[in-house]
Image (tube, rainbow, N blue to C red; front, side):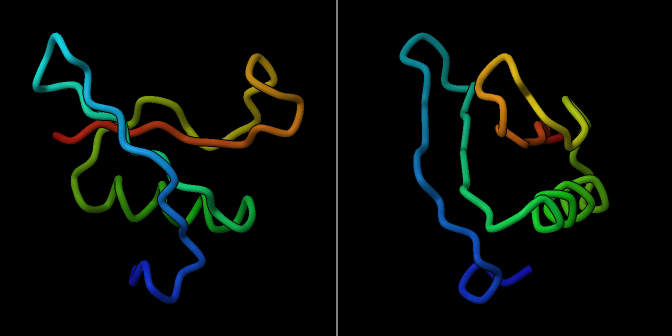
Amino acid sequence: MDPSSSGISFTSIYIGLESKTNVIITAKLKDHKTVNMFYNAAISAGGVDHGKPGLRPQYHPNYYSTFKKDP
């Protein structure tokens, strides 16, 4: 997936001060389909599932996301 043409907009990078191994990268994607495609590409590349694509109402009623870990 080429970020320059995929509609992905990286909005923040979080690096914990106490650990050099916990890095969180967030991206605002244009729709649920793109989130699902991103998840599938990450898993296909060896990423580890840490939350399948879906609504996360604990954050916001319309918050749709996925979580992955590097292998």
